[in-house]
Length: 94
Image (cartoon, rainbow, N blue to C red; front, top):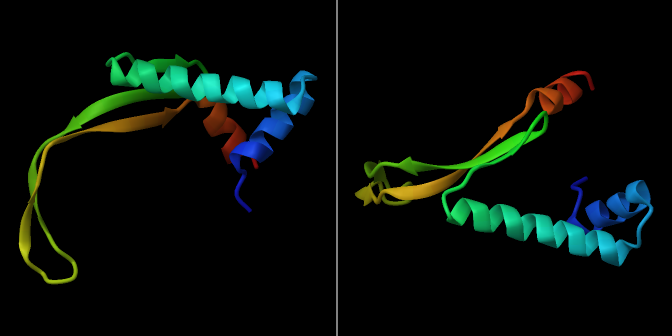
């Protein structure tokens, strides 16, 4: 089962002893802040949890899987998320 945004807000509300609406607002603010930082080229590091950053992917040749035709894939800026040590340890232990 996937944890949805509303499920996450509900769990945050219980953990922080706030209303679900306040938790949803906090989650939205977090998403907006991380997004704005990455758009501006500033990485976001949450020590022990994760680092959010951007990286440049160079142009390359690829193949259309349906037709087998060779296509050129343009260069792009992509999001890179690296899990922190605390997150890795918690997941590995489960």
